[in-house]
Amino acid sequence: MILACQNITKAFGDHFVLKNASFHIEEREKAAVVGINGAGKSTLLKIIMHELPADEGQVVLSRGRTIGYLAQHQEMVSGNTIFDELLTVKQEILDLEAELRKLEQSMKHAKGEELSALMDAYVQISHEFEQKNGYAWKSEITGVLKGLGFEETDFDKKVDTLSGGQKTRVSLGKLLLSRPDIVMLDEPTNHLDMNSITWLETFLINYQGAVIIVSHDRYFLNRVVTKIVEIDQGDVRSFSGNYTDYAQKKAQLREAQLQAYLNQQREIRHQEEVITRLKSFNREKSIRRAESREKMLDKMEVLEKPTEARTDMRMDLEPRFPSGNDVLAVEGLSKSFGAQTLFTDLNFEIHRGERVALIGSNGTGKTTILKILNGVLPADDGAFRLGARVKIGYYDQEHHVLHMEKTVFEEISDAYPTLTNTKIRNVLAAFLFTNEDVFKRIGDLSGGERGRVSLAKLMLSEANFLILDEPTNHLDIISKEILEQALNRYTGTVLFVSHDRYFINTTATRILDLAGQTLTGYVGNYDYYAEKKETMTSFTGAPAAAADAPPAAPESEAKLDWKQQKEQQAQLRKKQNELKRVETRIEELETRDKEIDELLTREEIFTDVAEVTALSREKEALQTELESLYESWETLSE
Image 1 (spheres, rainbow, N blue to C red):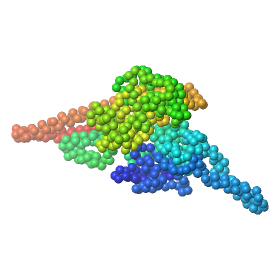
Image 2 (cartoon, rainbow, N blue to C red):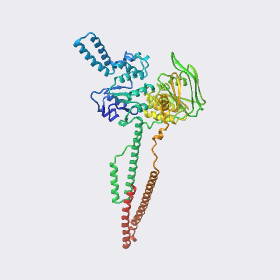
Image 3 (cartoon, one colour):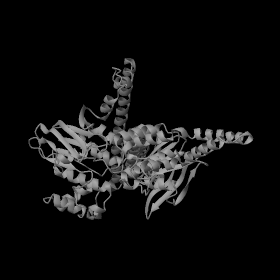
Image 4 (tube, one colour):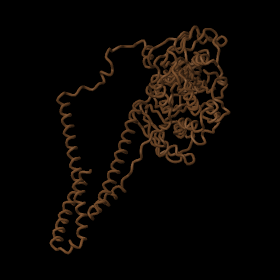
């Protein structure tokens, strides 16, 4: 064990973010911390780094171990170039190299014992230099920078001139080069394109230290991690396996919890019915049994109904009317910005019902294509044509379609003035904006909240052609899944740009890969595209489903199962019929018991000794039979 969190508790005011959170990380283990936005993932990393104090509990790091942390947002002030900034990580190697050069110069003029001493020092420092991979520091830095999406022409750019995303990539490069025993990354894929994410996956999979990742990129988590640490309403639970394993186990666990809850609720209702019936018998023995059962119920630890976060978020995309079969035709589209040519002579078509993913490296012009199609930017050459009855709904990753000065309520009511206040409130509630949240200014919202407002507007547009630019940015995993389900139910047409490979894999029916200023089409999802891109693809010829299918049960075994099932059903019917017979007999005897009590009040009866004796004997026999029937009923009712 290299790191342990023991009973970590953290609250902000009355809101507990973490409650007695405990987990550990083994050497070389690759773990992910998952949870909805605001669950406390980044808070947990800051507590581990001692940037934020825990209210209770402690973080234990093995002695002599180092830990490196990349936060979501990096503030970097440096006069260095990109290459020189990463070179600062290798200062120890540079110092050793300088010492070696100095010794080489000294050895030229030394003799005897002095030369021997210098040579011994040289051997020792050379060994240390080699151990620290000193001979490959330049290629190592170059490899990391290129892996993170920097071209060699970028290496001499000043860090201070970079964008926030580029600075984050520089910080990530420095962290990876420093090779601490534990690497902690908070949303490391946010500013990386697909090629860089793939490179980072390979780097982390082969990393000799431990890795802790906070990420909403499920494809990335599937490739890299072997453990999931989930934060759910303050509670922390660990699952072995990657994200898909976790999602399956989580669903099974919730199903088991729900089944246990429903079973207990059925048992409680049943016991309450038995108690009521026993009391209705109005017998001392029955009442004692009823009281005993009441005590048992009082001692029962009642299970809470399991809830799933964000089940109250609802999204239903449906076009007001269908478009024609030909939705979009693009011919000879070209676009440049100054001397930089993004793409030339692009040609493609989209038909009704398709969900087309436009992918490619950062800076290739994917968002530019969407802006041209929406009339935000003009094309240099070429044209596009929309089909009959096509109505576009546009989701802009930068949320330029939102008005920063308006409130959430005004954003919807101004865009759709025919909607009633109640309807607007209901729509916003479906996207988790309730009570006073609807009066927050758009400019004051987080990226995820703005994304939900844009999705609400998209849903209300009732468009039949959705054009989406990075719709999953800033959305947590559950919100992404809700969007995926809505798109898969959608009967219109979708064109979207995304670097979320899991999202693409789940929703896309066709992929357009923008590379080298041109487009290449692939029919299928992301896995199919990745397979086609692999040059070493092998075809087994046997479908995986057949290989995974369980062997068929022998015929005799199947017949035996059927026979056992029929016997069980027959036994159940027999017991149900017996219970019904007992209840009918109890009702008959209780009715007769009341009749005897009524008869014994009549003067012509209670004055007749022989009649009273006969009725008393009948009542005594009736009570004996009833007592036996009550016990039978109680047993059968279980």
